[in-house]
Image (tube, rainbow, N blue to C red; front, top):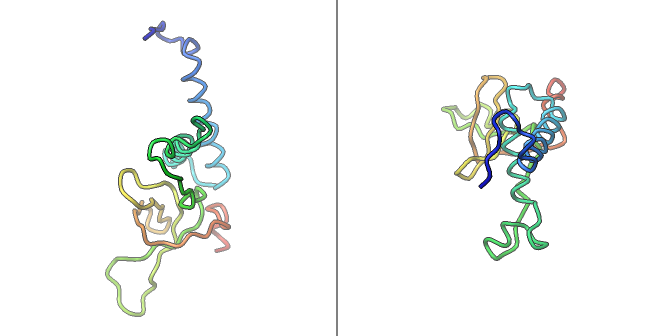
Length: 143
């Protein structure tokens, strides 16, 4: 372990470069989706998730090395895309069955995804949804 002088991040070049890489990827995803800056944490979470699951280790993905089997990447979704989340709130037969939300992150320690419900201004966690990755948050007025 090496110590650095306080206030000199340039002495730890590897960590600073990774911080810059994460920041650039998160900024790019957020700008592409059109989501406000308040969703920076979700973009950073996804950027780190993608880096951790896709950096080659001995010409294989880290999860392949760890688990000893092939990794499926079909669960990856586009940050900020329109999603239709099953409405589990109390409803009657004629109410809509889903809410239009926007994908903001993968679930932390549980299976599922996190969504932004723009109409009710709250975050929803769910595993029952349909993604429309062709339409982003910035395109919401036309959907």
